[in-house]
Image 1 (cartoon, rainbow, N blue to C red):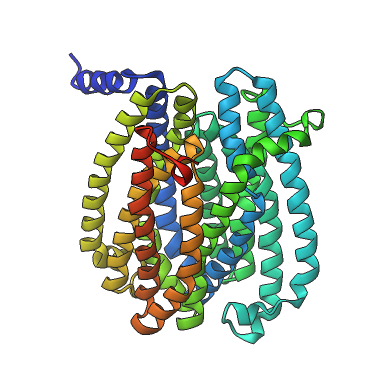
Image 2: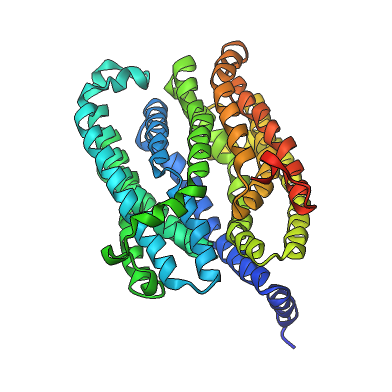
Length: 455
Protein backbone atom coordinates (compact mmCIF):
# COMPACT_ATOMS: atom_id res chain seq x y z
CA UNK A 1 0.00 0.00 0.00
CA UNK A 2 1.26 3.47 -0.90
CA UNK A 3 2.12 5.55 2.19
CA UNK A 4 0.14 8.50 0.85
CA UNK A 5 -3.06 6.61 0.03
CA UNK A 6 -4.35 6.61 3.62
CA UNK A 7 -4.06 10.33 4.37
CA UNK A 8 -5.22 11.17 0.84
CA UNK A 9 -8.32 9.00 1.30
CA UNK A 10 -9.02 10.60 4.68
CA UNK A 11 -8.78 14.07 3.21
CA UNK A 12 -10.99 13.11 0.27
CA UNK A 13 -13.55 11.58 2.63
CA UNK A 14 -13.59 14.73 4.78
CA UNK A 15 -14.11 16.99 1.77
CA UNK A 16 -16.96 14.92 0.32
CA UNK A 17 -18.68 14.29 3.64
CA UNK A 18 -21.65 16.40 4.73
CA UNK A 19 -24.26 18.62 3.15
CA UNK A 20 -23.71 19.47 -0.54
CA UNK A 21 -23.53 23.13 0.48
CA UNK A 22 -20.70 22.35 2.91
CA UNK A 23 -18.89 20.12 0.43
CA UNK A 24 -18.90 22.91 -2.16
CA UNK A 25 -17.64 25.36 0.46
CA UNK A 26 -14.81 23.04 1.55
CA UNK A 27 -13.64 22.55 -2.04
CA UNK A 28 -13.60 26.31 -2.56
CA UNK A 29 -11.77 26.87 0.73
CA UNK A 30 -9.01 24.40 -0.18
CA UNK A 31 -8.61 25.89 -3.66
CA UNK A 32 -8.69 29.41 -2.22
CA UNK A 33 -6.00 28.56 0.34
CA UNK A 34 -3.68 27.45 -2.45
CA UNK A 35 -4.43 30.59 -4.48
CA UNK A 36 -4.31 33.00 -1.54
CA UNK A 37 -1.10 31.35 -0.39
CA UNK A 38 0.36 32.43 -3.69
CA UNK A 39 -1.09 35.93 -3.22
CA UNK A 40 0.46 36.20 0.25
CA UNK A 41 3.82 35.08 -1.12
CA UNK A 42 3.59 37.71 -3.86
CA UNK A 43 2.65 40.40 -1.32
CA UNK A 44 5.64 39.46 0.86
CA UNK A 45 8.02 39.55 -2.10
CA UNK A 46 6.52 42.68 -3.64
CA UNK A 47 6.84 44.97 -0.62
CA UNK A 48 10.67 44.99 -0.33
CA UNK A 49 11.02 45.15 -4.13
CA UNK A 50 8.74 48.19 -4.19
CA UNK A 51 10.60 49.84 -1.30
CA UNK A 52 13.85 49.39 -3.19
CA UNK A 53 12.31 50.82 -6.35
CA UNK A 54 10.92 53.93 -4.64
CA UNK A 55 11.73 55.26 -1.15
CA UNK A 56 9.56 54.91 1.98
CA UNK A 57 8.18 58.45 1.65
CA UNK A 58 7.04 57.92 -1.96
CA UNK A 59 5.55 54.55 -1.02
CA UNK A 60 3.63 56.25 1.82
CA UNK A 61 2.35 58.84 -0.67
CA UNK A 62 1.21 56.03 -2.99
CA UNK A 63 -0.60 54.19 -0.18
CA UNK A 64 -2.37 57.36 0.96
CA UNK A 65 -3.44 58.27 -2.57
CA UNK A 66 -4.88 54.81 -3.23
CA UNK A 67 -6.74 54.98 0.10
CA UNK A 68 -8.37 58.26 -0.97
CA UNK A 69 -9.31 56.95 -4.41
CA UNK A 70 -10.65 53.82 -2.73
CA UNK A 71 -13.32 56.03 -1.19
CA UNK A 72 -14.96 56.27 -4.60
CA UNK A 73 -15.91 52.61 -4.33
CA UNK A 74 -19.00 53.83 -2.46
CA UNK A 75 -20.46 54.92 -5.83
CA UNK A 76 -21.35 51.24 -6.12
CA UNK A 77 -24.36 52.39 -4.04
CA UNK A 78 -24.68 48.85 -2.74
CA UNK A 79 -25.56 47.35 -6.13
CA UNK A 80 -22.68 44.86 -5.94
CA UNK A 81 -23.82 43.32 -2.66
CA UNK A 82 -27.45 43.61 -3.72
CA UNK A 83 -26.57 41.64 -6.87
CA UNK A 84 -24.73 39.07 -4.76
CA UNK A 85 -27.78 38.18 -2.70
CA UNK A 86 -30.34 38.51 -5.52
CA UNK A 87 -28.25 36.45 -7.95
CA UNK A 88 -27.85 33.65 -5.40
CA UNK A 89 -31.57 33.72 -4.62
CA UNK A 90 -32.56 33.61 -8.31
CA UNK A 91 -30.15 30.80 -9.21
CA UNK A 92 -31.16 28.72 -6.15
CA UNK A 93 -34.76 28.94 -7.39
CA UNK A 94 -33.79 28.06 -10.98
CA UNK A 95 -34.73 31.52 -12.28
CA UNK A 96 -31.76 31.92 -14.64
CA UNK A 97 -33.33 34.57 -16.85
CA UNK A 98 -34.06 36.69 -13.80
CA UNK A 99 -30.43 36.22 -12.72
CA UNK A 100 -29.30 37.50 -16.14
CA UNK A 101 -31.56 40.53 -15.78
CA UNK A 102 -29.98 41.32 -12.41
CA UNK A 103 -26.48 40.95 -13.91
CA UNK A 104 -27.19 43.07 -16.99
CA UNK A 105 -28.98 45.78 -15.03
CA UNK A 106 -26.20 46.06 -12.46
CA UNK A 107 -23.51 46.32 -15.16
CA UNK A 108 -25.51 49.04 -16.93
CA UNK A 109 -26.19 51.10 -13.81
CA UNK A 110 -22.61 50.99 -12.52
CA UNK A 111 -21.22 51.85 -15.97
CA UNK A 112 -23.43 54.95 -16.15
CA UNK A 113 -22.58 56.04 -12.60
CA UNK A 114 -18.81 55.61 -12.84
CA UNK A 115 -18.64 57.23 -16.31
CA UNK A 116 -20.19 60.39 -14.89
CA UNK A 117 -17.80 60.30 -11.91
CA UNK A 118 -14.77 59.89 -14.22
CA UNK A 119 -15.77 62.87 -16.36
CA UNK A 120 -16.23 65.06 -13.28
CA UNK A 121 -12.88 63.93 -11.85
CA UNK A 122 -11.12 64.71 -15.14
CA UNK A 123 -12.20 68.36 -14.89
CA UNK A 124 -11.58 68.89 -11.16
CA UNK A 125 -8.28 67.00 -10.89
CA UNK A 126 -6.16 69.98 -12.13
CA UNK A 127 -7.69 72.08 -9.36
CA UNK A 128 -6.81 69.66 -6.53
CA UNK A 129 -3.67 70.34 -4.51
CA UNK A 130 -2.55 66.74 -4.10
CA UNK A 131 0.75 67.82 -2.54
CA UNK A 132 -1.07 69.40 0.41
CA UNK A 133 -3.56 66.53 0.76
CA UNK A 134 -0.79 63.92 0.76
CA UNK A 135 1.59 66.07 2.83
CA UNK A 136 4.16 65.85 0.01
CA UNK A 137 6.65 68.33 -1.43
CA UNK A 138 5.19 71.06 -3.66
CA UNK A 139 7.62 70.12 -6.43
CA UNK A 140 5.65 66.87 -6.86
CA UNK A 141 2.31 68.56 -7.61
CA UNK A 142 2.30 67.90 -11.39
CA UNK A 143 3.54 64.34 -10.92
CA UNK A 144 0.84 63.65 -8.33
CA UNK A 145 -1.94 65.05 -10.53
CA UNK A 146 -0.89 62.79 -13.40
CA UNK A 147 -0.59 59.84 -11.02
CA UNK A 148 -4.05 60.52 -9.57
CA UNK A 149 -5.59 60.68 -13.07
CA UNK A 150 -3.97 57.38 -14.16
CA UNK A 151 -4.93 55.54 -10.98
CA UNK A 152 -8.47 56.89 -10.98
CA UNK A 153 -9.09 56.06 -14.66
CA UNK A 154 -8.07 52.43 -14.17
CA UNK A 155 -10.00 52.33 -10.89
CA UNK A 156 -13.18 53.29 -12.77
CA UNK A 157 -12.68 50.50 -15.31
CA UNK A 158 -12.00 47.97 -12.55
CA UNK A 159 -15.03 49.29 -10.66
CA UNK A 160 -17.32 47.79 -13.33
CA UNK A 161 -15.27 44.75 -14.33
CA UNK A 162 -14.96 43.45 -10.75
CA UNK A 163 -18.68 42.65 -10.82
CA UNK A 164 -17.48 39.37 -12.32
CA UNK A 165 -15.93 38.39 -8.98
CA UNK A 166 -19.22 39.28 -7.27
CA UNK A 167 -21.09 36.91 -9.59
CA UNK A 168 -18.57 34.11 -9.06
CA UNK A 169 -18.77 34.52 -5.29
CA UNK A 170 -22.58 34.69 -5.41
CA UNK A 171 -22.54 31.38 -7.29
CA UNK A 172 -20.40 29.93 -4.47
CA UNK A 173 -17.18 29.91 -6.54
CA UNK A 174 -15.00 32.37 -4.60
CA UNK A 175 -11.86 30.38 -5.50
CA UNK A 176 -12.19 31.53 -9.10
CA UNK A 177 -12.57 35.12 -7.94
CA UNK A 178 -9.42 34.72 -5.84
CA UNK A 179 -7.59 33.28 -8.85
CA UNK A 180 -8.13 36.45 -10.85
CA UNK A 181 -6.88 38.60 -7.96
CA UNK A 182 -3.81 36.35 -7.72
CA UNK A 183 -3.08 36.68 -11.43
CA UNK A 184 -3.37 40.47 -11.18
CA UNK A 185 -0.87 40.51 -8.30
CA UNK A 186 1.47 38.16 -10.15
CA UNK A 187 1.41 40.35 -13.25
CA UNK A 188 2.16 43.41 -11.08
CA UNK A 189 5.12 41.62 -9.49
CA UNK A 190 6.59 40.60 -12.83
CA UNK A 191 6.30 44.09 -14.32
CA UNK A 192 7.63 45.85 -11.20
CA UNK A 193 10.59 43.46 -11.12
CA UNK A 194 11.24 44.27 -14.78
CA UNK A 195 11.10 48.00 -13.99
CA UNK A 196 13.66 47.63 -11.19
CA UNK A 197 16.09 46.21 -13.75
CA UNK A 198 15.40 48.71 -16.52
CA UNK A 199 14.38 52.04 -14.93
CA UNK A 200 15.10 54.26 -11.96
CA UNK A 201 12.46 54.62 -9.23
CA UNK A 202 9.39 56.31 -10.70
CA UNK A 203 6.10 56.80 -8.87
CA UNK A 204 4.15 57.20 -12.13
CA UNK A 205 5.41 53.87 -13.47
CA UNK A 206 4.59 52.18 -10.17
CA UNK A 207 1.04 53.56 -10.08
CA UNK A 208 0.42 52.65 -13.72
CA UNK A 209 1.54 49.06 -13.19
CA UNK A 210 -0.49 48.47 -10.03
CA UNK A 211 -3.54 50.01 -11.72
CA UNK A 212 -3.24 48.33 -15.12
CA UNK A 213 -2.48 44.74 -14.06
CA UNK A 214 -5.78 43.85 -12.31
CA UNK A 215 -7.81 45.54 -15.06
CA UNK A 216 -6.06 43.54 -17.78
CA UNK A 217 -6.69 40.27 -15.92
CA UNK A 218 -10.38 41.11 -15.36
CA UNK A 219 -10.89 41.93 -19.05
CA UNK A 220 -9.49 38.53 -20.09
CA UNK A 221 -11.40 36.75 -17.28
CA UNK A 222 -14.71 38.39 -18.27
CA UNK A 223 -14.43 37.10 -21.83
CA UNK A 224 -13.41 33.66 -20.56
CA UNK A 225 -16.32 33.34 -18.10
CA UNK A 226 -19.14 34.96 -20.05
CA UNK A 227 -18.28 33.10 -23.26
CA UNK A 228 -17.97 29.85 -21.32
CA UNK A 229 -19.59 28.59 -18.10
CA UNK A 230 -21.51 31.81 -17.44
CA UNK A 231 -22.77 32.35 -21.00
CA UNK A 232 -26.41 32.21 -19.87
CA UNK A 233 -25.75 35.18 -17.55
CA UNK A 234 -23.74 37.28 -20.03
CA UNK A 235 -24.64 41.01 -19.72
CA UNK A 236 -26.84 42.19 -22.57
CA UNK A 237 -28.57 45.49 -23.34
CA UNK A 238 -31.69 43.47 -24.13
CA UNK A 239 -31.78 42.24 -20.52
CA UNK A 240 -31.23 45.63 -18.91
CA UNK A 241 -34.43 46.29 -16.94
CA UNK A 242 -34.12 49.40 -14.80
CA UNK A 243 -37.40 48.49 -13.09
CA UNK A 244 -35.45 45.69 -11.35
CA UNK A 245 -33.07 48.21 -9.84
CA UNK A 246 -35.54 48.55 -6.97
CA UNK A 247 -35.06 44.86 -6.08
CA UNK A 248 -31.30 45.32 -6.06
CA UNK A 249 -31.51 48.56 -4.09
CA UNK A 250 -33.97 47.41 -1.44
CA UNK A 251 -31.11 45.56 0.24
CA UNK A 252 -28.28 47.23 -1.66
CA UNK A 253 -28.99 50.68 -0.20
CA UNK A 254 -28.30 49.37 3.30
CA UNK A 255 -25.07 47.80 2.08
CA UNK A 256 -24.26 51.12 0.41
CA UNK A 257 -24.51 53.08 3.64
CA UNK A 258 -22.49 50.45 5.50
CA UNK A 259 -19.92 50.58 2.70
CA UNK A 260 -19.54 54.36 2.97
CA UNK A 261 -19.18 54.14 6.73
CA UNK A 262 -16.56 51.40 6.51
CA UNK A 263 -14.57 53.25 3.84
CA UNK A 264 -14.48 56.25 6.17
CA UNK A 265 -13.83 54.04 9.16
CA UNK A 266 -10.94 52.02 7.71
CA UNK A 267 -9.42 54.20 4.99
CA UNK A 268 -8.90 57.37 7.04
CA UNK A 269 -6.03 55.85 9.06
CA UNK A 270 -3.50 56.41 6.25
CA UNK A 271 -4.54 60.05 5.86
CA UNK A 272 -4.51 60.78 9.60
CA UNK A 273 -1.06 59.20 9.99
CA UNK A 274 0.26 61.09 6.93
CA UNK A 275 -0.99 64.40 8.33
CA UNK A 276 0.17 63.83 11.93
CA UNK A 277 3.47 62.06 11.36
CA UNK A 278 4.36 62.32 7.63
CA UNK A 279 3.96 59.89 4.69
CA UNK A 280 7.00 57.82 5.70
CA UNK A 281 5.11 56.70 8.83
CA UNK A 282 2.25 55.50 6.64
CA UNK A 283 4.73 52.93 5.32
CA UNK A 284 5.54 51.79 8.88
CA UNK A 285 1.83 51.41 9.68
CA UNK A 286 1.19 49.49 6.44
CA UNK A 287 4.05 47.05 7.04
CA UNK A 288 2.31 46.00 10.27
CA UNK A 289 -1.08 46.09 8.53
CA UNK A 290 0.15 43.78 5.74
CA UNK A 291 1.88 41.43 8.18
CA UNK A 292 -1.11 40.93 10.48
CA UNK A 293 -3.37 41.21 7.43
CA UNK A 294 -2.34 37.64 6.66
CA UNK A 295 -4.85 36.55 9.35
CA UNK A 296 -7.98 38.23 7.89
CA UNK A 297 -6.82 37.16 4.43
CA UNK A 298 -6.70 33.50 5.50
CA UNK A 299 -9.86 33.80 7.59
CA UNK A 300 -11.59 35.50 4.68
CA UNK A 301 -10.82 32.47 2.52
CA UNK A 302 -12.83 30.32 4.93
CA UNK A 303 -15.68 32.81 5.20
CA UNK A 304 -15.98 33.66 1.50
CA UNK A 305 -18.10 30.71 0.32
CA UNK A 306 -20.53 31.01 3.22
CA UNK A 307 -22.14 34.42 2.57
CA UNK A 308 -24.00 33.01 -0.45
CA UNK A 309 -24.35 29.63 1.26
CA UNK A 310 -26.16 31.34 4.14
CA UNK A 311 -28.39 33.11 1.60
CA UNK A 312 -29.36 29.78 0.06
CA UNK A 313 -29.82 28.08 3.44
CA UNK A 314 -31.99 30.95 4.72
CA UNK A 315 -34.35 30.76 1.74
CA UNK A 316 -34.59 27.01 2.26
CA UNK A 317 -35.12 27.44 6.04
CA UNK A 318 -32.14 25.19 6.85
CA UNK A 319 -31.41 26.54 10.34
CA UNK A 320 -29.72 23.34 11.53
CA UNK A 321 -26.98 23.75 8.92
CA UNK A 322 -26.56 27.45 9.75
CA UNK A 323 -26.20 26.78 13.50
CA UNK A 324 -23.65 23.98 13.08
CA UNK A 325 -21.64 26.12 10.66
CA UNK A 326 -21.55 29.07 13.06
CA UNK A 327 -20.36 26.83 15.92
CA UNK A 328 -17.39 25.74 13.79
CA UNK A 329 -16.58 29.35 12.98
CA UNK A 330 -16.52 30.29 16.67
CA UNK A 331 -14.04 27.49 17.38
CA UNK A 332 -11.96 28.78 14.49
CA UNK A 333 -11.74 32.18 16.21
CA UNK A 334 -9.77 30.52 19.01
CA UNK A 335 -7.15 29.46 16.46
CA UNK A 336 -7.10 33.02 15.13
CA UNK A 337 -6.31 34.29 18.62
CA UNK A 338 -3.43 31.82 19.03
CA UNK A 339 -2.04 32.70 15.60
CA UNK A 340 -2.22 36.45 16.34
CA UNK A 341 -0.29 35.98 19.60
CA UNK A 342 2.42 33.94 17.86
CA UNK A 343 2.70 36.49 15.05
CA UNK A 344 3.09 39.29 17.60
CA UNK A 345 5.84 37.43 19.46
CA UNK A 346 7.85 36.87 16.27
CA UNK A 347 6.99 40.21 14.62
CA UNK A 348 10.34 41.98 15.32
CA UNK A 349 12.25 39.10 13.69
CA UNK A 350 9.88 38.97 10.73
CA UNK A 351 10.08 42.76 10.14
CA UNK A 352 13.89 42.67 10.27
CA UNK A 353 14.08 39.85 7.72
CA UNK A 354 11.27 41.23 5.55
CA UNK A 355 12.03 44.96 5.20
CA UNK A 356 15.35 45.27 7.01
CA UNK A 357 16.25 48.53 8.71
CA UNK A 358 14.49 50.71 6.15
CA UNK A 359 11.20 50.66 8.09
CA UNK A 360 10.74 50.52 11.90
CA UNK A 361 7.52 49.13 13.38
CA UNK A 362 7.06 49.51 17.14
CA UNK A 363 5.82 46.68 19.37
CA UNK A 364 2.86 48.84 20.44
CA UNK A 365 1.64 49.12 16.84
CA UNK A 366 2.03 45.35 16.39
CA UNK A 367 0.16 44.61 19.64
CA UNK A 368 -2.84 46.76 18.76
CA UNK A 369 -2.89 45.42 15.20
CA UNK A 370 -2.94 41.86 16.55
CA UNK A 371 -5.92 42.68 18.79
CA UNK A 372 -7.64 44.42 15.88
CA UNK A 373 -7.52 41.38 13.56
CA UNK A 374 -8.78 39.02 16.29
CA UNK A 375 -11.78 41.24 17.08
CA UNK A 376 -12.60 41.63 13.41
CA UNK A 377 -12.42 37.86 12.84
CA UNK A 378 -15.12 37.52 15.52
CA UNK A 379 -17.14 40.30 13.91
CA UNK A 380 -16.61 38.74 10.48
CA UNK A 381 -18.33 35.44 11.24
CA UNK A 382 -21.45 37.24 12.45
CA UNK A 383 -21.57 39.91 9.75
CA UNK A 384 -21.06 37.22 7.11
CA UNK A 385 -24.15 35.39 8.39
CA UNK A 386 -26.21 38.57 8.71
CA UNK A 387 -25.17 39.83 5.26
CA UNK A 388 -26.12 36.50 3.74
CA UNK A 389 -29.64 36.57 5.14
CA UNK A 390 -30.04 40.31 4.48
CA UNK A 391 -30.45 41.42 8.13
CA UNK A 392 -28.09 44.41 8.10
CA UNK A 393 -29.88 47.38 9.67
CA UNK A 394 -28.08 46.99 13.03
CA UNK A 395 -24.72 46.87 11.20
CA UNK A 396 -25.79 50.01 9.37
CA UNK A 397 -26.28 51.98 12.57
CA UNK A 398 -23.14 50.61 14.24
CA UNK A 399 -20.99 51.44 11.21
CA UNK A 400 -22.41 54.96 10.98
CA UNK A 401 -21.77 55.63 14.67
CA UNK A 402 -18.29 54.12 14.42
CA UNK A 403 -17.30 56.18 11.37
CA UNK A 404 -18.40 59.42 13.08
CA UNK A 405 -16.53 58.66 16.30
CA UNK A 406 -13.40 57.18 14.73
CA UNK A 407 -11.89 60.26 13.06
CA UNK A 408 -11.80 62.58 16.11
CA UNK A 409 -10.87 59.68 18.40
CA UNK A 410 -8.04 58.56 16.08
CA UNK A 411 -6.70 62.12 15.87
CA UNK A 412 -6.87 62.53 19.66
CA UNK A 413 -5.16 59.19 20.34
CA UNK A 414 -2.64 59.82 17.56
CA UNK A 415 -1.64 63.20 18.98
CA UNK A 416 -1.28 61.80 22.49
CA UNK A 417 -0.09 58.22 21.94
CA UNK A 418 1.57 58.20 18.53
CA UNK A 419 0.87 55.99 15.53
CA UNK A 420 -0.47 53.10 17.57
CA UNK A 421 -3.14 55.44 18.96
CA UNK A 422 -4.69 55.68 15.48
CA UNK A 423 -4.93 51.88 15.28
CA UNK A 424 -6.18 51.74 18.89
CA UNK A 425 -9.13 53.94 17.94
CA UNK A 426 -10.41 51.59 15.23
CA UNK A 427 -9.80 48.60 17.51
CA UNK A 428 -11.86 50.05 20.36
CA UNK A 429 -14.74 50.97 18.05
CA UNK A 430 -14.69 47.44 16.56
CA UNK A 431 -15.67 46.18 20.02
CA UNK A 432 -19.17 47.67 19.52
CA UNK A 433 -19.87 45.18 16.73
CA UNK A 434 -18.22 42.40 18.73
CA UNK A 435 -20.88 42.85 21.43
CA UNK A 436 -24.07 43.52 19.46
CA UNK A 437 -23.78 41.34 16.34
CA UNK A 438 -23.64 38.03 18.30
CA UNK A 439 -26.74 39.15 20.23
CA UNK A 440 -28.58 39.76 16.96
CA UNK A 441 -27.52 36.36 15.62
CA UNK A 442 -28.89 34.54 18.69
CA UNK A 443 -32.16 36.49 18.58
CA UNK A 444 -32.68 35.61 14.91
CA UNK A 445 -31.88 31.92 15.32
CA UNK A 446 -34.24 31.64 18.31
CA UNK A 447 -37.05 33.63 16.64
CA UNK A 448 -36.79 36.41 19.23
CA UNK A 449 -35.64 39.18 16.89
CA UNK A 450 -37.88 42.26 16.85
CA UNK A 451 -37.49 45.77 15.48
CA UNK A 452 -33.93 46.65 14.47
CA UNK A 453 -32.74 43.14 15.45
CA UNK A 454 -34.96 41.58 12.75
CA UNK A 455 -34.07 43.86 9.82
